Image (cartoon, rainbow, N blue to C red; front, top):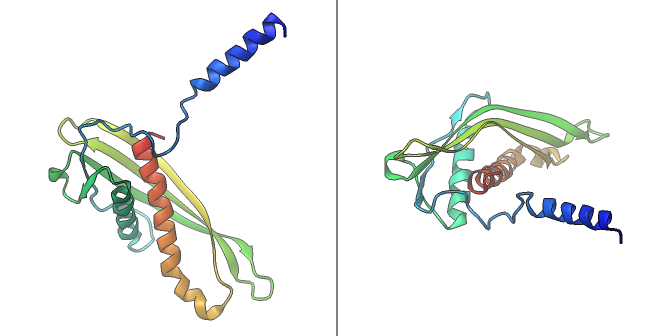
Length: 173
């Protein structure tokens, strides 16, 4: 192998090691002093009725599942506060059932803002004013079970949303 090829390969290897990737869940970018996170109810600026309640519950559950932090609702009792606002929720049909004409798969998009702030110093540890969550969800073509799916579908949406937000906040992505 020529000297130029060896230098080029070494350069690519050096770039690859400094790319910033790491395994999710392995390193928190929060200060070691953080033990308690307050999660007040998210604000809802969308037209989706009470979605903030489901998404807030899911965020609390996901933070508790991490096992590293105590979660409270009162910011005065916490080291940091995770605040957020849902700005819009959009649904779009992706796939239709030919015989019935009903949508069998929907794309759900949630636009929100999220901010994690240290309570004593007011330092912003994480902020994303244009966070975007998007996922596809299958729906049943059976008319009897179609309306019963709304609650489980919203629960799946909330869980998926919470995982993405908590990962972004704790891992700095």
